[in-house]
Amino acid sequence: MSAPRVVVLHGVNLDQLGVRDPAVYGSQTLSDLEAAISGFARDLGIRSVVFEQTNFEGEYVELLHKTRDTADALILNPGAWTHYSWAIRDALEIAGHPAVEVHLSDVQAREEWRRHSVISELCIGTISGKGADGYREALELLLHHEAPAAG
Image (tube, rainbow, N blue to C red; front, side):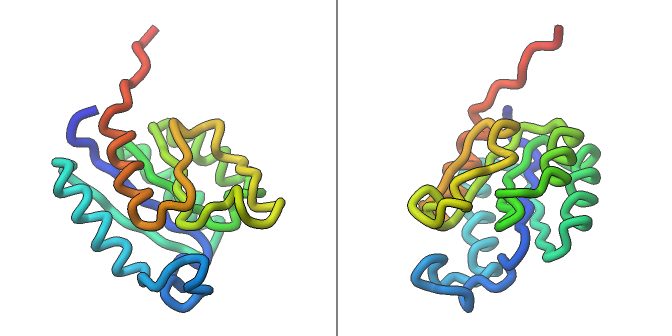
């Protein structure tokens, strides 16, 4: 995929970065994180990155629906919804875009309930525990992803 339009969807509580448990999530605010992602995108030649954040599950679903017309690829960090929101999973499937799941913290090293993702099987990759650098890795993965041949 060359120069995709990428939508980054931040989920529940990500607006609290910088306040919420800095030992786990770091000291960057959501604005800091988005500035870093924009810089990564520029460095990689990605033409468009749009950011959305919501603490409302239904709104997250609606944002995914809208990406059908506004994006070529997605980066998702649904927060806690990752572990149980079948509605978000279904909306991701409807969107039909290559997607990468990203988590700032290492969810596999945390509580048992955080180790399961209902969206991972729909994603081309999952990146966890790399902080903001995980988003750079996600962008690189999307750039090198080959769309399946029509058949």
